[in-house]
Every structure is written in C-alpha cells, then in structure tokens.
Length: 501
Image 1 (cartoon, one colour):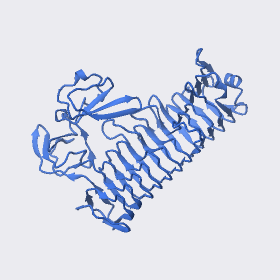
Image 2 (cartoon, helix red, strand yellow; image 1 turned 30 degrees about the vertical axis):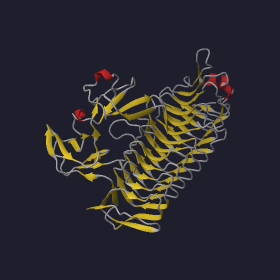
Image 3 (tube, helix red, strand yellow; image 1 turned 90 degrees about the vertical axis):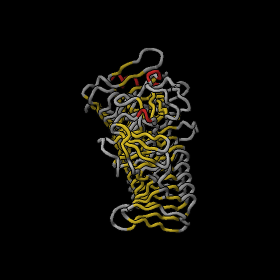
Image 4 (tube, one colour; image 1 turned 180 degrees about the horizontal axis):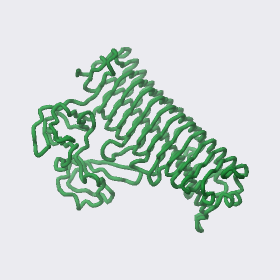
C-alpha cells in the first residue's frame, strides 16, 4: 500500500504511520518541536521514501527500455537495489587516465568523478564537452554511456534503464529525486521510532537539530548521508541499521556535540556501485562530548569510525570490520587534532575490535595530525595493513591492547618536519607477529628515543629478529632485533619476547 506522507505537522504531536505502508515524499519536520514519528501495528515498519514507481515502459533499443519521469532522478532502484548510473569507462576498468580516450564528445552535463589524491574522491558537473584533468577519472550520466545491464540514464523527461536480466522494468523500478526522506533540520525534541527510510538524498536530515532521537530505525541507500546531523546537539541513535549510504552513514561533520550512538550497525558506506566521495561509516568532526558504543561498522570505502578533532569523546566496545576498501591513508578508527588547538583531545578508544583494514595504508587505529591526550586501551587490532599509527602524535597512552597479524607493522610513528612526537606511553600490550612484520617503525628525526616509553609488553613471533626499524632522516634506516632494540632504546626492561626477557 502506498500513501503520501503526512503534511502540515504541528508541534507537540505524534505522527502514527501504519505498519507495512510506504509513505511517499519528504516528511517535513523542519523547525518542529516535540514531535514523535512512529509505526503503529505489528505488520512491519512503515517506510518513508521520496522515490516513486516508474511505469509505462516501452522498448528503446536492444534491451534498453524508456519511460517518462516528472523529475530528474538522483537514484534509480531496480528490484529494490540502487542501479549504477551509466558511465565510462566500463568495468572492470574503473578509472580512465586520458581524456583523449573518451569515445564521445557529448559531455556537457555529465558528472566528472576523479581521484583528487589517494584519500579523496571529488565530483563535479561538466559545463562543456571538455575533460580537464590529469587525475584518474570516470564520467557518468549521459545516454551514450548506457551500454551494460544494470545501468540507467536520464535525458530530458525520460528515464532509460537496462535491467540486470534484460527483462522489462515494468513494476520493478523506482526513481528518487534529490530530496531527503525526513527533513528535521533546526528541529528540537523530535523522535523517529520504528521507521524505515529509503532512497533519500539524506535518509534523515537533521542539520542543527537539538535532541533528535532515532530508535529502532532502518535507513537504506541514501545518495549522500544516512543521517546528516552537522551542528547538532544531543543526537541519539540506538538500535538502528544504516546500509549503503554513499558518503557517510552518520555524519555530524561540523561541531556535533553530546551525540550518543549505541547498538547500531552501519554497513557498505561508499560501497554502492562506483567509487564516490565518501568519508566514514560514522563521521564526527570538530565536536565534543560524543559517545559511540557497541556499534558495528562494516565494509567502508574510507574510514570506519572517524572522530576528527573531537574532544572528550569515547569510542568503545565496537567492531570495525573491513575499511579503507576504496581509499587509503585511513583508519578503522581515526582521530586527529588538525585544528592545532593546544589542548588534549581527552579521548578514549577502548574495548574495540578492529580487523581487516587493508589497502596500502590501511591502519587499524589511526592517531593522525598531532592527536594528543588519547587513551587507547583494551582493543583487539588484527589483520590490518598497519595495526596503529601515531602521526606526529604526542602524550597518548597505548595500553592493554592486542595487536596481531599486521601485514607490514604493528605500530608506526611517522614524524613530520616541524612537529615533535613525544610523551607517548606503550605498555602492557600484546604483539603477535605471524608474517615477519615489524613491531615498531619510527622516524624521521633525531629525537627517536623520546617518541614514547615502552615497557611491560608481551612480544610473540616466529622471527624475533624482525622487530623494529628506525630512521633519523639523514643516514640509512636501521633494522633492530629485539635485543638490539632494547639496547638502543633503553626500553622494554620488563617486557618479554616469546616468553623470555
């Protein structure tokens, strides 16, 4: 059953949506106060979506069908799953490196998606028929690019689709404009309880909202963020599932304060169809007093959980499994103090499990850009390219963690020119090497011996001769066996290697 979303919602009301019903459009709660939206009945969650069924399909060419639409689609779903916008080049090649290879001059209005660097993907619309970039790129959105099953393109008032099985799209296709499913911007004391939202630009937009409560919700296939909560205060997300957001699952990008995310799963962020701009499964930036506890973040294109220059924030008892799938120089759990404010972050990363963070620079727990005042305690960090990195970081405590089976090294300490790594404490950790990986890698700098204090650690590995690498930035790097490390550093006097002092 399909109905329009309720409109004209007043403050101090409860919006009861019937179970099993799809409500079409955007539920507008902008500026509203004391509103509860909930499902009534026991036949499943009510669904809110700005998407509309597309009907009246006729054959166009080959196995491509065409139908009229009354808006320009931002997303198209076939059998409930977002289809890829028609693009060039085709898989398995994702990125082109030369504009001279583009097989058509009809490019104006297409979207250019390009790799700004190894950590950033950007997109822009072309206003001419020229591609001016020397960076890896692909193009999408023109009808001539529609040449594979599972793709779509829009032109004028028409939608063109080639279904994955080549059969008619009739009764199978929904198209969504660039509208959010729920708009709760500038709202106060709004509760979303037991609702499913799908195919919104944002699933829930909550810019500068106060005390937004999202409970027992499902948020699927947002064109940008599952929950957009920049500048919000007291956001609470509990027992919620967010899948397939293209940029961020939960995004509190600017000054999110007093947010609590618990018992929630975020998956496949930035992983739907082709690579696109993406930051993290959960992205908090520039905020304070936030808590992320008992969440699962799986299969992220970039960071799993990012709490950049957050202060007095905790990430605890959570699982990050598979991150940095499409971008690199990133972390399963990431923080930084790039704002250069000389105050400790007072952050705690505790009791988490971080696994399968891969790629050339996939880092399990990443303290980046002068991160300081962070306690990293009691985490399990396994099967990552690098277990942990402290990039120009200082005054952090790394204790009672288990690092296992890192591909390259367990902990790296890279120091930028003009910065000083100091005051870090690495104690009571267990390091298990299974593939000849280094335990520590430090440099460059003349201050390597004061990067951190190391003691009461347990080191286990088949080859204790592969232990640490240090580099002063002038001469060649130096490889240390475990005994050489202890002599050189004067550290680890109460630590053991394979059970021996």
